[in-house]
Image 1 (tube, rainbow, N blue to C red):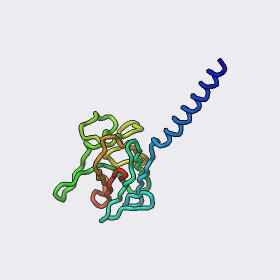
Image 2 (cartoon, rainbow, N blue to C red):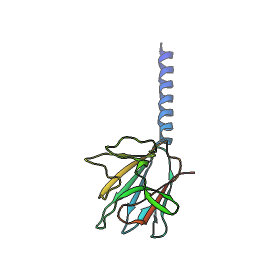
Image 3 (cartoon, one colour):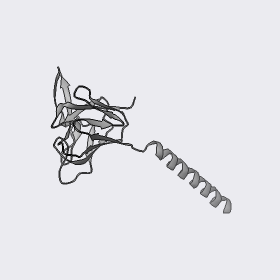
Image 4 (tube, rainbow, N blue to C red):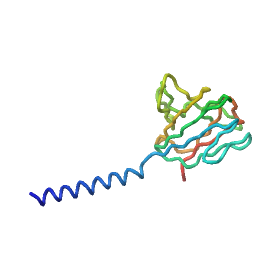
Length: 156
């Protein structure tokens, strides 16, 4: 009986170690995309009027946290560009209070009274990278449009 209990304890400890150690490699990261004046910022990089911010280290399950504060109004929305013309592409995000559509690649989390996606807001909005996210997703500020752009990409 002692041999069985000792073997069970060792096996349980080994499995627990594997689960804990293995779980760390699957942990989601949070990527904070913030505003500074009329620019998006991320990891020491900033967008300009002519150069979009590139966030290119995302993994499935990660969180993109949009942080908006300060006196200048901002908001976040995904876009598509075709033939040089960009338009909102709200169908790429499963926003709070909305049904999941067929093109969804990001999901708004931490829903409060209403969705913050596609509208001017202050505070934080969190978007989960879904397993349907494959191609880069462009975005811009709902106020400054093409003067404040960015792109979300999976890590190669």
